[in-house]
Image (cartoon, rainbow, N blue to C red; front, top):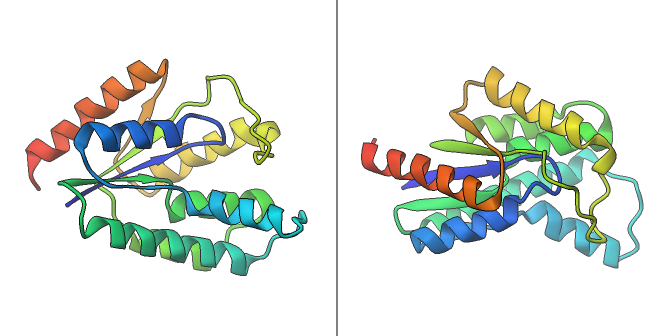
Length: 178
């Protein structure tokens, strides 16, 4: 089973891309649990206060959902974010890395990371709150993906261009068979 993870700053088309790729490959995809958690937090009286424990819980639940979805996926599992992304979100809100979240990210393996470019317009949807740090977050993804030697490619341009490149890359790892 191959695993592909889509990461990037807020409002870069990750969820749309994940859904389209899953449809293309007739497989499962794992939505971003952190967003679900945030929406629930807002419904229950959201405050700007976040704790490291929340990020650990988000990273663990995202991983659990991925592993569950992988059991029935068709050759490739598409993941809309991962614990690496959660670790960068931790930095954004807590202003420092979390060794626990970084460790969770270090235990997860993906065959390919797709970094959704931040050159597309930011769209506020009522939940997003990080437009002002979007470029910083994007740079953190580049730094972390590169430093950790994870296999990654930047997706830029229109949705069609991003989808075409992603399909070519995923087809390549599926044909590789390793």
